[in-house]
Amino acid sequence: MTARNDRDALGRDGPDRDGPDDEPPPGPVEEPVPDPEAVLGRVPTGTSLRRELAAAARSRGRTSSLADEIAAIHGELTAIEVPDVDLESARRRLADATGAEGRLEERVAAIRGDVRARRAVDADPAKALADLEAAAAELSEAQTARIAAEQTLERERERAAAARDEREHRLALRDRLENRKRDARQELSLAVYAEFRESLSAVPGGDPVVAGTPPSEYDGSPLAASLGAIRIAEIEGPVTLRPGVASVSDAWEGTDPEAVLDVPVTGPDL
Image 1 (cartoon, rainbow, N blue to C red):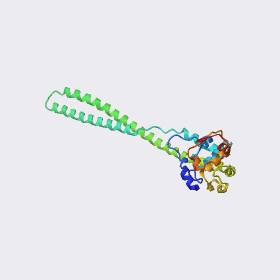
Image 2: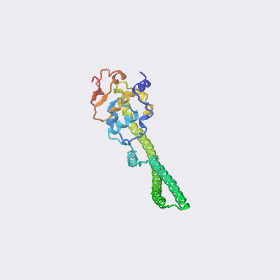
Image 3: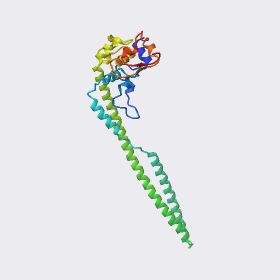
Image 4: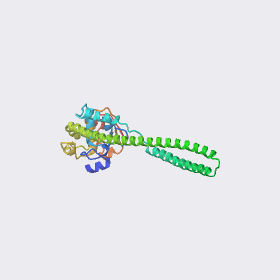
């Protein structure tokens, strides 16, 4: 099986890029540095070679020169709170208040007409005047409610503008964080790449010849790369070999997975 076919079978990205798992999620912010056990605790890992090697490096106590900056950006990002905004409800309240005010204005105008008509024929306008007074009071309350609704809508618009600014700031920070994390993975993966290349001679399907010098030149089996990264890592395990790994790696050819990886292993038929 070719390296390209291995990548297709395992759903892995090529080693020269970090792949879609590096895109910031729309929900909660991920931890700035993933636990090496979480990255390397299963095979296939479902992630990139750089991420595997960076996890292996961190498991051995290495830290990136960007670690402090990454932590600071992550802290700033998690501190951002985007306010909840309900413009639609505020618009509905203003529309309702404006409608009620308009209806009362029409009612007041009609009663005033009735008062004038009664006076024109010398009829008693007392009841009409009482109705006018009551309607005018309701209109005053409606006008107050409409003004309050306008002010509420204006505040919600200001909150919406602030929320947009916060979201844009958060997106910019996410991009910056992902770029720094990518740079950190590159730095850490380079730091252990020579040892990783040597480890390929001990894992099924591994071949140091196809490893190249930097991770971007690796052209071997993604599965062998995962096993090589686990072999040089210092993790407690166990590492779970998922169903299908044996067939993809052309079995283990009589080798003991725990001896190869130097970590407890669980999985099918083990």
